[in-house]
Amino acid sequence: MSDIVTGAVAALTEKLGGAGFDGSAKFAIEGEGAIIIDSDGVRASDDEADVTMTADVETFQAILEGELNPTAAFMSGKLTIDGDMGAAMKLGGVLS
Image 1: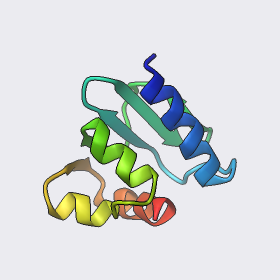
Image 2 (image 1 turned 180 degrees about the vertical axis):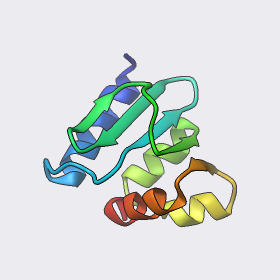
Image 3 (image 1 turned 135 degrees about the horizontal axis):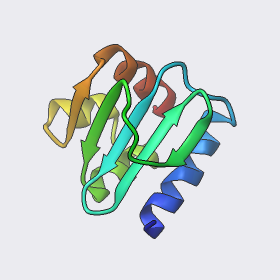
Image 4 (image 1 turned 90 degrees about the vertical axis):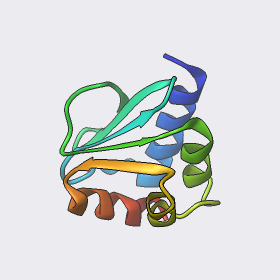
């Protein structure tokens, strides 16, 4: 597991405040790995999910740090979403 994924798991866990997520979402970080967020919390995994969001490392870090709104990233083509758009929107609210 890469340092990027390890750091992202810690950051997402902190943002969620230890709570789980209703549904499942996967962040696929190009060239680094994937993270699953579900009712069990946050973990490094490439399991199937209701929605998969894919971005490069820079975009993902900017979203995590609050420098880039997830919706703006999607609209500008920096973030791709495959699957349940409702789950993506719900998670976007948590990350903002």
